[in-house]
Image (cartoon, rainbow, N blue to C red; front, side, top):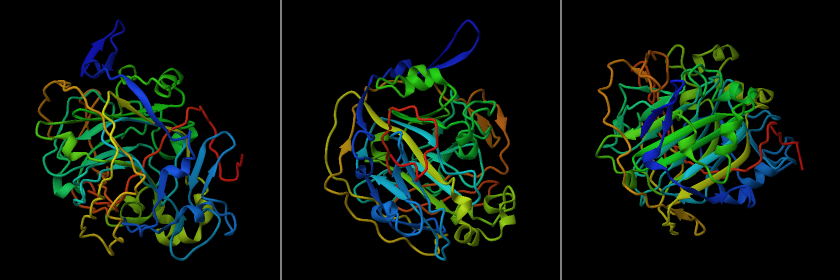
Amino acid sequence: MSFSKIATGLVLFTASAHAASYTLQKDYMKDEFWNNWDFQTMADPTNGTVQYVDQATAASTSMGRDPLINRNANGSYYMGADHNTTTTNGRPSLRLQSKDSYNSGLFVLDLSHMPGGECASWPAFWLLGYKNGQQWPAGGEVDIIEGVNNQNGNDMTLHTNPGCSLKNNGGFSGQMQLSKMDCGAGGGHEGCQIADQQGGGSANGTNPSFGAGFNAAGGGVYATEWLPNGFAIWFVPRSDRQRLKQIKSDTPDPSTWGKPLALFNFQPGCTMSSNFVDMKMIFDLTFCGDWAGSTDQPGYGWLANNCNAKGSCPNFVNSQPHNFDKAFWTINSLKVFQSGAGNSTGNSTEPSVAPSPMAASSAPEPSSTLPPSSTVYSTTFTTVNMFSPAPEPSTADWSEGANGAVQAAATKKARHLGQHGHQHDHLHDHLHLHQHQREHGQWHDHDHDHDHEGHPWDHE
């Protein structure tokens, strides 16, 4: 990793040590989109007030509600929760996991709308690893987009086995919690997190990276680069037309995108190839549960931002469907790129669900093997010394990666950990450390620059 100064004095993030040349591997919008995903119908491992439904149920128009999935007239795809009917056992919603698995890649997701901004909602887009049937988090977890209720800043979190600790070299615009640098702490449940505490993809918070603010600004693009020694996550808002054009092209060049929102750079001893294995993409949308519905600490979860004025979280979700008419994803594009050669095909065994002391009930055991059609992709990287030595971390809780400025985070939630069904275990250390067992799915993006939200009734 290197930094260069131009005449104006602006510091630019460059990746000259890893000037990867990426080629398009899969465009999820080219095929029948839904055929690339498994619709998971498990009981929610995060104890949410939700019913995950299968594809046929999601597409149905004969159940007194709008369909939960749809292809919009502009070619984008809608995926959301039931916002028409009352229920007594959880709001119908979706959890999709990609059929393909990855061991490398650049994942580029263009969204014009995401769930969030409404009390009780808990959406996420993430990668979940599967390592020969071993217990989570043996195959790793990368939470790319996640948040609850009406927050405006995105939380990005990694969960691993012991042995993966972060450096803090700066070079990113989010904020890292310096007291929690071990991604495998607590059996992986605590995780390590870089958060967009400013509420925006830029340091001044003018480009909200999550929830209602993200949607009001027309959304944007998230790009996640799997590096030889970590992960980088960029957020490019809809207003940044120049970067948006490059990041959405079929020849993406991360070295031109500026600082990422998050840069997870590991200390020696964390081997990427053994800690992040056969990863699948996951989209899910749950409600309440161990984070969004938490009532165990003032100013956190359901007790934050006056959500508790609506009564109990489960009752609110079950009885007030109209409050969730904005709880949906609109996917304009999802693409996966690879650098170099070395694609391979094969099956992998899914991990066992990790036990959680917070679990009121356990989720059903997931299938032990991937479908025969599953494809595993990998790329061989050239080994390079990308990062300079890390400075000694501050004793303060949070550090802004852009300039090392310390920021307090007494009320900032920690991270979520994932697996084939996550559970969030809230610990008290000014931060909640979530144990959540979930499965991750993957999306491929579209190359259209759609700016409207796209509702389920927007038929082609």
